Image (cartoon, rainbow, N blue to C red; front, side):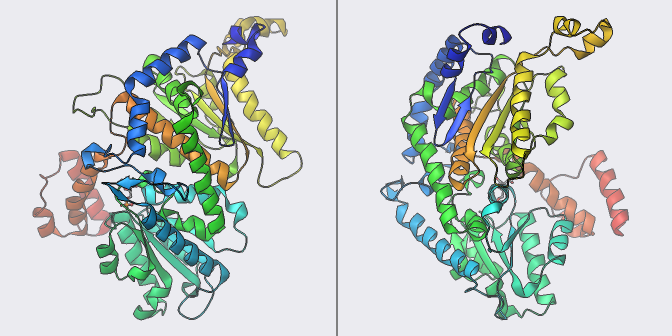
Length: 526
Ligand code: F6P
């Protein structure tokens, strides 16, 4: 790469390997690619059927074959004239109906018109959910917190470790707290345990059972379970099984977003996602941002065998984006079986990791610069920060750009010697081999619109890669077994031996049994 950038046509390279779409600017010039590489990768995308499967997704086909479902999160952010259908039936009226209910509810809470049972304003909202019912809205609320105005404070509780809920509740006044129980299935162990404990917290602090309705709302596809839990279906915001959990923040799962930053901002987030959808469906493959990013990822994963990829947002506002991306990519494409049931013959999703810059520079960037494995990096940076302190943003951007430059260019022994160094051992340690790839994505500022486009970009990138690997990016069977095995173990830990014995699964292995025995002793159930 260093040589490519040294030659007179480098500006042509930048022109050729950069793209703008939906308010995002992507520079992918610092990759190990030539025009021929990109042409061949585009040919691969085409031959793998990316345009065909993209069109099938937008047509509402059941592309989630193992669950026999359509995949239509794109309908949630579609324009007023869209006509998405599932099994021949239009879904747009239902979507608009729920959106309207979200608007009314969020405006009532934010204005103080919706109060707790004692007539006090809602000052705090807890979203109880996990995975897709947590990571997306949590990330967006964090990113847009500068737009919160005088809306309620948002809290997110996901872990079944009671510490998270207990510490959150410690800070809150039940009279002014609203809980959103957010779960596609409304059966998820962590969410239901936290929801039950939150309900008990209200009861223990003097909120009567018949007053709970003012303090609970539900987001789910499962009306029966919501009713059984005791939440008034009038306070339930529906979504549908053709929306995957990790793609659901555009649905009523985004209720916490509308509460935190207002419905208009939520609508702008949808508009940003829509702008990326329009780009994805209309741009030719070689100028199509999700396709280009997806195929560059394939290039490193499958042709170079790079096992991980790093997401480095240079923005505290976007600090939760790597965690969101982890679920998006690793739950979607962490698969080993093709659509036809045969084993995949190539590696699928890399391990995705990262955190906000510049913090990462003082932690793990050492490995990215000089480690024995090459880690492709995606840098994401807003040109204008939500909060301005004199001098800070130039320092932030300078560091972001410098990291990408250092990774590409490296530092040679000759350069070190020319700078006066002569200790060859030291020089060996100080050489950066360079030639390390990265993409840089710039957004004007952290607005709902650009954030929506950014999220949709990575959703479609994930989709593109799943198509090339010929896997189903929309199921997640790999999370099942651990859940099944946890049930009898929980019974043993709590001393419910009969229930444990009636479990379907065989007794545990010796290692697990020893762990259970130690935990039982600590819990006083030995
Ligand atoms: O266990 C994984 C998972 O099913 C995710 O795919 C999902 O986002 C999460 O659990 C939460 O599920 P639910 O919204 O049904 O509670």
